[in-house]
Length: 238
Length: 295
Image 1 (cartoon, each protein chain N blue to C red):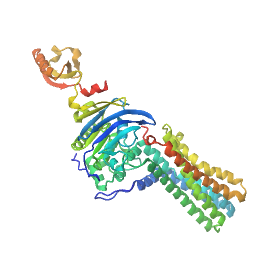
Image 2: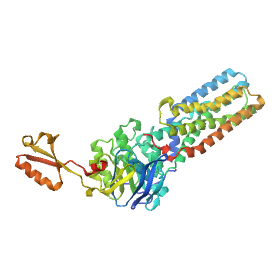
Image 3: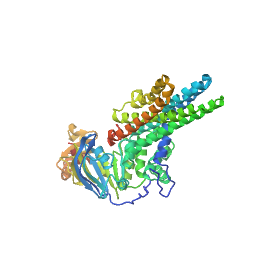
Image 4: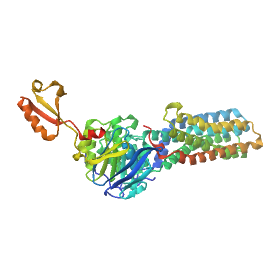
C-alpha cells in the first residue's frame, strides 16, 4: 500500500518500511550470515589451491548462510503478530495475505544481500587468484546457488511464520523462530551430503532438481497457508 | 493539551451510522458473540460494558473487520465493513499497544501514518497533541507502559474518521494523562460515534451517553446511561461529630454509608443527621447503576 499525500510530505509505503524494519530486526543474523560466509569463502580460496574443490563446494555453501542471514523477515512477522501490529494493519484494510507476502519479500531482500556479497567476494577472489569462471561454476551458481538460496530462505520463513501462528506462543530457542533456521538450512545441507556421492553426470540434476523441488514446496506451503492461516491467526496471543 | 485539529479523511466527515444485525463471531469456529444487533448514528460515547470474556474485544475486532462474522452483517453508512472505503471511516484502538519494535516513536507513528494516508505534518501534530514530543526520538522499547499507550492512542488522531472503536483506551495511564485522554475523546464524540470499553465504571458513567452491555456474547442492554436506575441508592456522608451519633459499622474510610430507596430520601437523611447533632461536610453518591450490569 503506497503512502498517500494530504498536503504534506508523503510517508513511505508499508512495503518499504517493512523492508527497512526487516533489515533492522534481522541485522544480527544478517551480519553473522555475511561474515561467516565470507570467512568460509576466504578459507576455501586459500586452501583449495586448485579450482576443482572451489567449484564443487562454493556454490553449495552459499545458500546455507543466506538462509541464516535472511531470518529478519520472519522475526519481523512473528514480532509484529505478538505485539498486535498485524491486527491494527488489518483494521486499516491491509490484506492479511499482503502482510505475509511483505515478510517474504523482506526475506528475499535479506537473502539477496548475503548471497550477492558472498558471490561478489568469492568470485572476485577466485578470479584474482588466477582462475577463470568455468561453465561448470557458472551453471552451478545459476542452476543451484541462486534458486536454492531463495528456496531455503523462503522455506525457513514460510515454515516459521505458519508454525508460529498455529502453535501456542513460546519464547526462546524452543520457539518456531528458534527452530525455523534449522528447517531452513536442512535443504542445502541435505543437498551438500547427497551431492558428495553423486556421479558427475547426475550432479546438475540432483542439485538443480533439489532447488526446484524446494521452490515448489514453498509454493505449496503458501497455497496451504491461505487455508491454515485464518484472520484469527494474525491476532496477538496476548 | 491543545484542541485536536484532525486532518480530514478522504471521504470527509459524515454520520457513521454503524449497524450490526444478528452478528455472530468468534475465534477459530468457537462462537463468542451470538446474534448481536444494534445500530448507532448519534455522535456520542457509547460505553461497551461487560464482564471479562463477555465479548467486548471480539465485538470491536469484528466491527473493525479484523474478524469475519460467522453470520449477520455489519455496515457503516450502509456499506459493508469488508470494503476499503468503509475501513477508511473507522479507527480501532486495541487493548494491545501494537507499537512495532525497533522503531523510534516518530518512526512508529510514520509507519501507521503511511497506512492511513497521513503526512509528516499529521505526525508532528499528534506528537504535540498527545504531549509525546519529548519521546519523539526514543525507541519504543525504552518507553514505559503508559508512554506506549499514549503513542498507541496518538495513532487514532493521525487522520479523522467517523467511527472510533476504543478498547480500554485509558488502561495503564496515570490519572492526569487518563483525564486528558478522556477530554480528547469527549471532544471527538461531539460529532463522532465513539464505542468505548472500560472496566472503570465511574469513568464510563462520567463520559458515556449510552451503554451497550454485553453478557456471555449477547446484547444484554442498550440504553441511555441517564435512564439507568440502581437497584439501591447508596450515599456516603462525610461528617464532623458523626462518631458520637452514628454506628461504627456504617463508617467506610471517611464516609458513613447509607442505603436509600432513591435520591428523594437524601433530604430526609440530612434532616435526621442534623437532629442528631451531626454536621454534614459532604454527601456523595457511592453506587453506580452500571455496576448492576455486572451482576
